Image 1 (cartoon, rainbow, N blue to C red):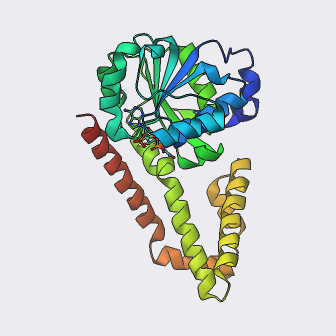
Image 2: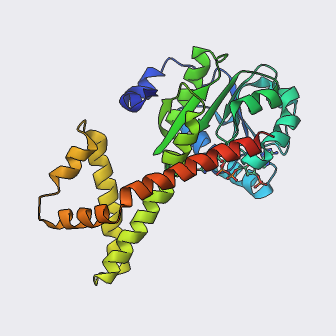
Image 3: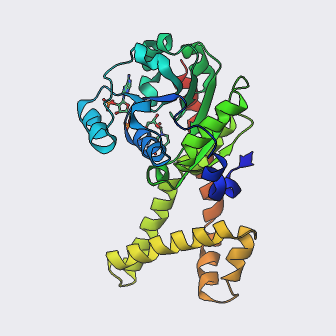
Length: 290
Ligand SMILES: NC(=O)c1ccc[n+]([C@@H]2O[C@H](COP(=O)([O-])OP(=O)(O)OC[C@H]3O[C@@H](n4cnc5c(N)ncnc54)[C@H](OP(=O)(O)O)[C@@H]3O)[C@@H](O)[C@H]2O)c1
């Protein structure tokens, strides 16, 4: 794994010499994830007329025009031949069908998929090319705070990877994986992770209300505690355990809460829950690949 965290501050400087308008980029699917990436590319200086989008849904096409000045196509056409990079941002259920409509128009492109669960071997077979990068982003990508894990099939060149990095950096952090099977673990940790955070935020808010605070006060306290503690961990090289111990004096209030959680075996149960997510990711990969 190569973590891009340290690169983050310098990422755009690093890519300054990378010609953002050198080749066109096409998006299959113009929904949420595509919009997050298109917004990032335009911010980096990419011209809207170098971005092609295939989007069958009228209101979503209208939004692309309104937000970015991009006139999306209703279906794949020979215009896609001009795209060096094709980004797959459709729902997993429609990927296979969309690839069948597209593969003839994209014989030499690099394909980059953000679709959950679809294995790169399926994508390679459907599109008849090994030039494929598969990823697993998460929802904070929509506000530039995402975490995306990437896996490239061996045929992808360094230049191809750099191009994908440039697109992904606009959605937040990223890391490369050497083994594609690890994307199931990534799905369980960071892909589904925002839902676990919301779940704990809900619990903290409910606890606050039980203790007499308003729901709004509880929400603010919970959210800002999560983001503050996360930022603290982000900026620190110390083990998470040390950070936790530093706010847990023996016999104190935090200690009482943590002892209660230990007594209820919250941590092993939480780990078990993520293992269930990993198993489901594997099952979905088998289903979608058929
Ligand atoms: N949102 C996230 O945070 C997140 C996180 C991880 C992974 N992902 C993955 O990212 C992908 C996109 O997610 P999203 O949230 O951006 O979904 P979305 O907003 O629903 O966008 C997908 C778009 O693709 C369009 N589409 C459907 N069939 C198509 C076709 N044959 N050709 C071209 N476009 C087609 C859809 O139109 P219709 O509405 O008409 O179907 C929709 O506008 C999914 O595979 C998802 O698993 C998303």
